[in-house]
Length: 223
Image 1 (cartoon, rainbow, N blue to C red):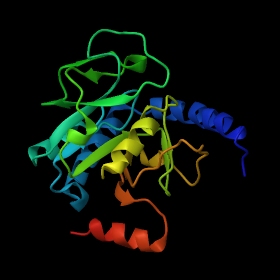
Image 2: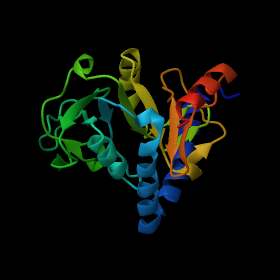
Image 3: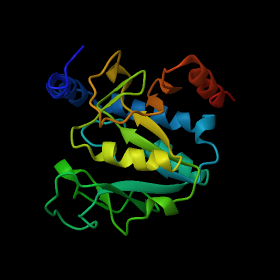
Image 4: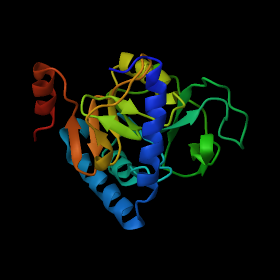
């Protein structure tokens, strides 16, 4: 069992180990992953969504563009995240602890590379979270996920601040990473937020938790 003081170091060590593996993925593997993610649009969990918040893949993250395209074609409104303060303009100084805001977009363009590390972000006004139509689902990028829903992000804490607000409004939270990045265990701190489902190129599955919850969630995915 790790102490609280050990967990940040353990997370940093895991990030240091996982990033080179992800960056070594070739274009063919990334394209295949994108196609396999898109096939998940047929899962019952994605049916009838009024809103879906996605992300723009960065640094060899699994690319959800084809999946998002299919969900939009099925009627979901598309939103993308932006670190509050940029306003969709050129690079501006970011405040530590800044919140993620969601912007409604018609497509994955136009975007500006104004996010941390040059991540592409949407242009336009942010929406009040309570005004976004339900049912709603958010795809959350992860550097690693555990089968019980624990998530390792990039370390900025942006999603850890956003997800409790979305969960309180009834959003479904789906973590996205490569299948090889699924871990049997992950170091977590009190502020780290878990996901409800895992999505990789191997498919969509509910997190492992207590048997009753697992049985209920598994039923949602049956056709």
